[in-house]
Amino acid sequence: MALADFDRLQLRAWSGGRMEQFALAGIWRRAWSAAQGHEAPHIAPIGHWLARVEAEFVAPAEVHIAERGGQPLAFMVMLPERAYVAQLYVDPHRHGQGLGRRLLDVACRRMPAGWRLHVATANAAGQRFYERYGLQRGAVDRHPATGRERVAFGWRPTGDGATGE
View: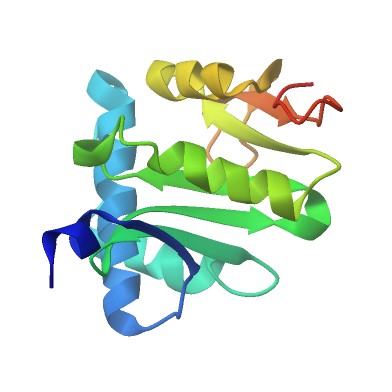
């Protein structure tokens, strides 16, 4: 494979294959752990994340992957019928390469009337990323299953092609 082919970022829907499940579970675990910083008392083993991939990355969810050279680097799980981005994770070693932005661009195309997401209040870097993208900060609440504090963000088209509400 030529270096130019490896450098070319590709976005695609996931196939659901077993190796891909493991790759996404690994990204999810590493990125979640990095986002929690010192606030994460325990990081669940990879089996926990793999079980979540198997359970949550099924219809009606849409899973999109950013990859280079066939290697998954980031993913996003959307629920278009709810206008919701359920998960967006970039491998921590790949931050700053435009992967998250490109995935959010997919969300804007797939949900052109607008969409929302939540991010943990402990994830300051994630909040800054969403603000830079143009999402509007909303209310703070608690995740219904974990009780962790989170903040809502939303995107609406502005009419001029830019992001923002």
